[in-house]
Length: 200
Image (cartoon, rainbow, N blue to C red):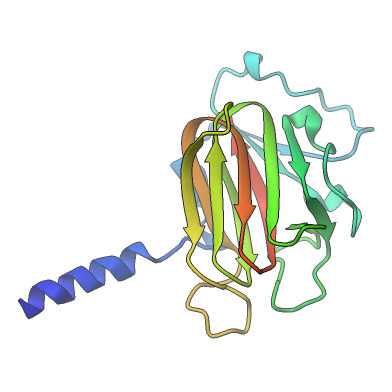
């Protein structure tokens, strides 16, 4: 009986291990990505508007946040790539508890703290981002009718230089068909997103 309890405990601990930013290859392999597009917020670039109907292989759109200005409200900057944000602000974190992995700019929920939404112009099949949060953070995916499709969560805080067993910049991802919007939400907390990616 004791051996059985030990085995259950080990399985639970293993399943609670969340992938971190070092596991980017895991994330891409998990989505079976064949093409990847780095999406710029700059409107003056010559890249064409994304036409999902012409894609012949699974394609990942990864947002390049470095084109954004610090404290810029982010809403329609990536609309031509198929996503619109709500309650989103680009920041350069000054608090060392919210480190960036590479680059300087991340997204955070603002002006309403603890919430950020992304709406897709065409349905997507997976969404992921690397997150750092002061509290438990829930990623929820919805269909066209705002019916919940799936949820995943960062179980607790993963701030840098804290006692958290979860490292900063931990991957949260959802892989389900016909996602029209996602929300990131935490109760009474702050969080940052990096490497926001969605797949068609």
